Image (cartoon, rainbow, N blue to C red; front, side, top):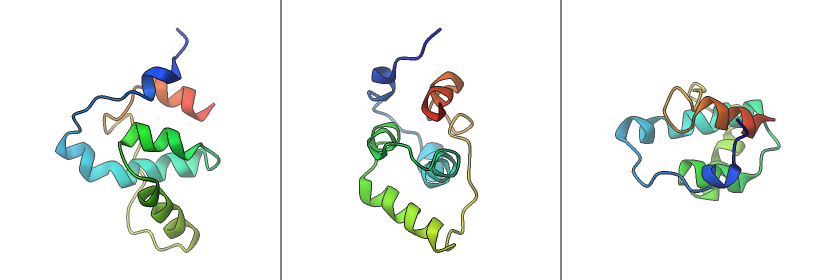
Length: 88
């Protein structure tokens, strides 16, 4: 079953407290696994701003991160198939 990226770019409106607390960890996980990912996909997937993502990238470069990466599937941001599509 082929994944449709348009579906990913129209995420659910409600983001639970658990997801909000783990957003940075999930973005870090994706950036570590797919450093060349389009930032607009991350903005839509995590309902965030580019400045937030750029801050994480900057901290990665300077080794200043104090968080552990977390798989976004485990945090409920996307399905396994959606994640696989993003990373391919």
